[in-house]
Image (cartoon, rainbow over all chains, first blue to last red; front, side, top):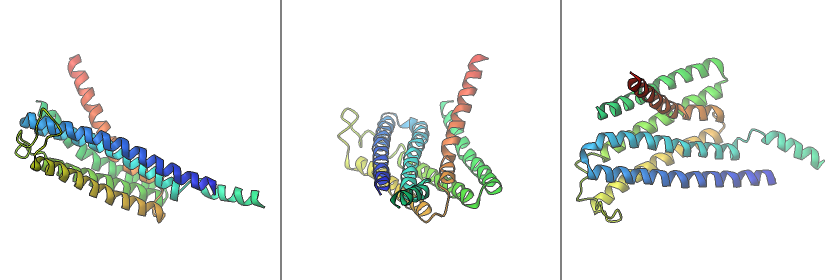
Length: 91
Length: 148
């Protein structure tokens, strides 16, 4: 049981840290892009492309963290073996 | 010339997204179990759809007419006009809606055991791989251009 509690804790902390980092990164990127375009509207195309690529990369990191967190909770690879081991030890 | 590189880069990423997605999905259905291949299919499709929606949102929001000096005080970034604030909020709200829908889809896929999680991660990497490929290609082109 402790193992599964630890998994849920790990998943929660993992997605929390990932969301924190990604949101700061994306916020900084967006802020820079908006200010850059406001200063020089002609650079809109270039800045948007660079921002798009950057945001896509950052966003994918957060999605990876979400998937890993969900794997930890719902599809842990060793869950069945651990349950078996715990059952054997309990007997 | 600068804009050419950016246009080329984004065109390359958009095309290579689909090529990589089709290739790895086909390879997945041929070589791996059905759940693994479905993971690649759903993951790839989700991330490509996300990328296109993000592109649409950004291009719509970052038109030069909407972003002018009247909406943003460049000396103090905390002073933004109502219109500028609404513009930023719109981008962020759309981002959160998109991200929530992606989260729900991924949650359902893993929770209901419809797909293999490793396959899903491979599928979700399609855009990252194509961006890395695009930047590597541009860098290689730049290095060889300088060498000549």
